[in-house]
Image (spheres, rainbow, N blue to C red):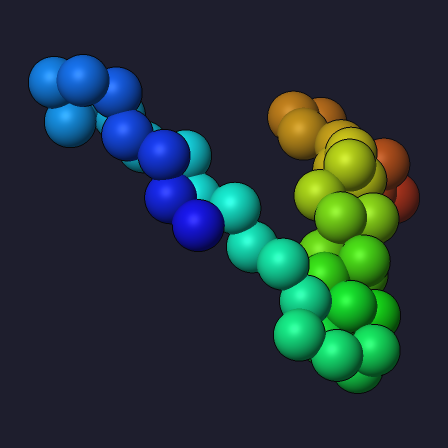
Length: 47
């Protein structure tokens, strides 16, 4: 399903699983979407 603003400038796409396997895959994407990865400096050994 897709919803559009009146001027068609934005859209919202809604994905729904068709079976249990697809539902599990979408759930994995939801979990991966909230992971935070460090940026900037790294803890590398001094030379």
